[in-house]
Image (cartoon, rainbow, N blue to C red; front, side):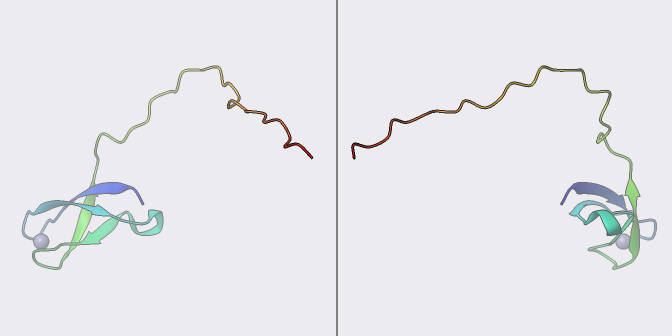
Length: 66
Ligand SMILES: [Zn+2]
């Protein structure tokens, strides 16, 4: 699960919490128990540059004598 930043509007406490994608919008405040709002953090993923993908090295082993 990804880590999100939350800010509690009630007590002003800020914290980070691992939340599932379905419940990432809000998280319970660890201080007062209120529902904190998710803060925008540097989780933005800019355009990924095209990179050449190379296949993983496949090591072929010789068959055992038999
Ligand atoms: Zn709070």
